Image 1 (cartoon, one colour):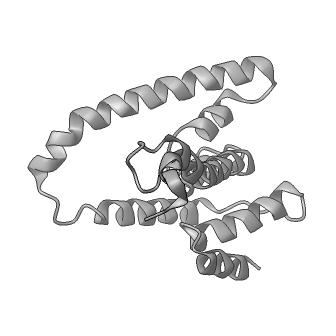
Image 2 (tube, helix red, strand yellow):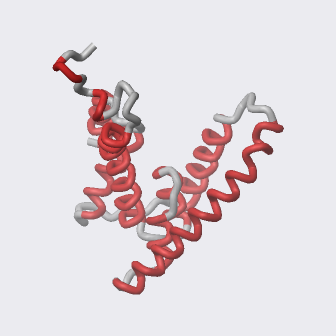
Length: 171
């Protein structure tokens, strides 16, 4: 079933469909208590090494000086995201009785696959973490085109104000 959903999402052009298909199926099966499976540590460790290798491989050929030039911005955005995730996590745990560690990883910015592996490695609730990250991805994927439409500059060919020209002519 995971393969069918993955291929369907890929065919629909959903970004990362091959990853999200199995994640959605797993979330439904685990979240609905249809199955209960935990990943053995050696497999989880190998998956983390694989994800890290693939992520690092994307920087092949990038000059080291370029990476150093972005280091300050990367550290700054990391600090801001940790603070925001921490504040939200503490606020959520004050309102509902959820473990702080689950909430922090669920709200922390990061790739869905990496955060799921992190949840498994830290023995957190992977369904809770995965559901929040998938929700974030769906909201951004569906909301970004709408926001771009309404907030594009007036002269942009994609903006709301550029749709109609005076006199009814659209050239």
